[in-house]
Length: 391
Image 1 (cartoon, rainbow, N blue to C red):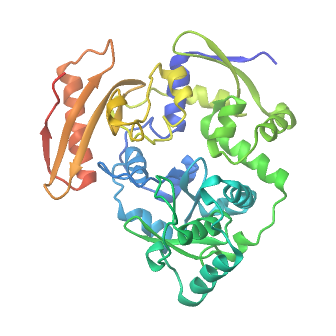
Image 2: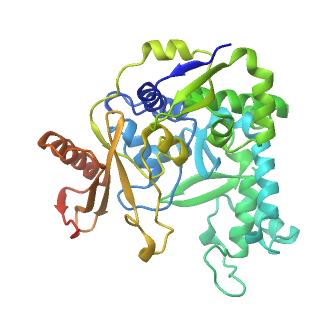
Image 3: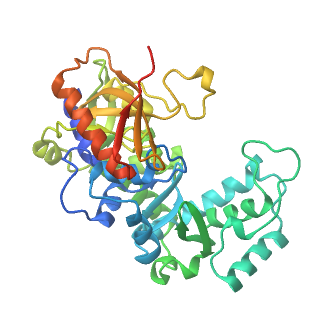
């Protein structure tokens, strides 16, 4: 079959639409459907304006507000928390297809150096017994201490034990108080029909690969694998070979004019025929937004070189601690450093960088200021202060 050629601008627009950023972020909010269509939403502790999961959902529908997530998790049991490429929330209906990931993560963390020798059967049994008898507990309900020198990623034994049982699927996130996670027995959180459903591993792998390709529309084997980070390279290759008759070979034009060989979902031609230009609204995206998480794909499609620098020593940062990409239409036009202070009721703009070749027109500046007003509303602050650093 001759590969379908997809020009760069078309590829950019397709990616934004499947990422949920093609339309104006307004209208009726169906949170469960939104999370389902994205596949997962990454969780993160850092709160400069809003935590990543809240910002990601708000970027797709600005009627979203922070308390909605806990209702979806703790009250409706519509989502569960586990590990994709990082800690994430996933639709509860995906649970049967996540059983092998529980096993993969259990094996992975048990071999990780940061777990050290602090896992013991007695220690795990103690955690199980307390949660069984007392109900949901957080790390604050335990008092073991870090042994030896304090290092960045070191954890006290109880945190290591809780994490191990959570990764393995034996414990589940019951609810959160702020960002504090409460652990409970999985059988008291997960619906029994989904928890006990048995799906052969090869069917789970097929589902993971098909579901990933459906959500990225076009992608290489590596991009399909990286979407969930729940399969091995060899498993994706074997899936692609088995599924070849149903997949569409494509060639995708990069921002620099090069071409990449990839696979597309079976309905790719229908998707392309229905494609419309994305909204021209200027958007402030979170650094962990799924549309930009794969930095290699981002640079290839958009020519936008973006790196998160919160873990880079301050003296070595090129941009700043927490810098947000600016998306306008189908282009990344700049980046901004902004911070919310709820006590002072203030959103402060610390730095603003436009991409080379981007004209700073009154219209574009007005779009940015409008988005900052909306972002302030998400953060629950009212005053916007420009405090740009000297170049």
